[in-house]
Image 1: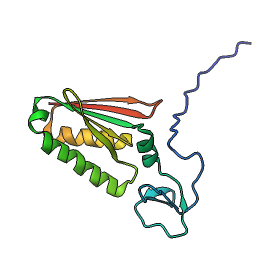
Image 2: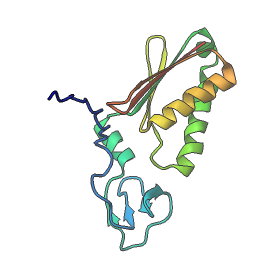
Image 3: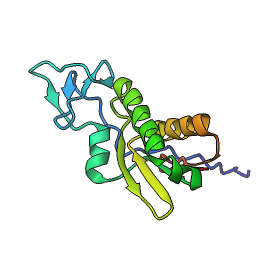
Length: 155
């Protein structure tokens, strides 16, 4: 009797997600975010809260982004400050509701700017808001195995 071998897809492993359930409440000693009812919030933690570094601060500490947004093109160079303001506003809006979504760095490159983020969702939102506001060319490359998003916007 022949047995058919089946390849099972590998589970996505995110080393920045806690491997165990955190005790509640837990406060991040770096940013002050609080883990309560299964999620990170900006609620004030009680004095007796446990302490554990949140995934966003852990990524920042390790300099290991989950999202990369590359910006470039002549239009970008002409409207640089306005576009960077849109990035910062997008981060403020998202971070207010989701403490783990942050811009890690905005670095100059030869042709434009590279923004790195702690979360793939923020990278996607930034790229989509840029495209919605200014049109241009938008490209996404998602690596499921590494839980990594690379977005490129040019105009």
